[in-house]
Length: 114
Length: 117
Image (cartoon, rainbow over all chains, first blue to last red):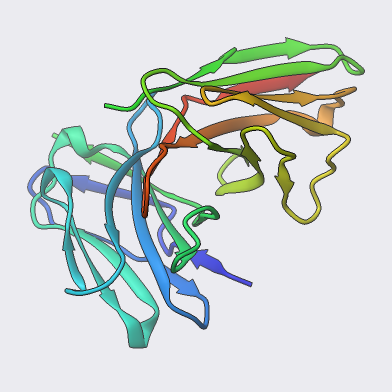
């Protein structure tokens, strides 16, 4: 069965610090990978996605993620965080071609202090 | 951008009551909607996939008679929690996928917090 593991449940950073949130998945076949963000009081929004091609994916608001197939990882990065990045971040995966079923990680709550 | 409206946002009711949650796609048509459940500090768990005009597909372990799903139109899906009990208290989130070929992203509603007393 597919599963997604997010290593950090809660991350606290100061503004301008660099961010890396870990995500590992468990699935033997080809996968599509996603990062979603949920700002306080708002709904989930797609941050970025990987289907194929360049394993380094750039998303909105300066975020990027790198797919490392050998490590079954899809870590999210941002070189310099802002206070407005305070949110909860969810990694998700589905089987390639199976656009329906998203398997989510438990989420990482990021707090950025000014 | 695509907007999904979920109603109500919060409901508190007595044990044994049935509760209906609505999920509407406001500015697009969705043949497929999804219902998730989220427990505190845990991930979203897919409960069922709702297809317009046909029966919903439930995930393993989800009671279809307990969680009734109706997707009567391309813009509305409803989840009814029948005879709700305290263990049904949770955060329920819907999402909808636009019509179209190939990949279409899921757009999420704001969620409904259900508290059963």
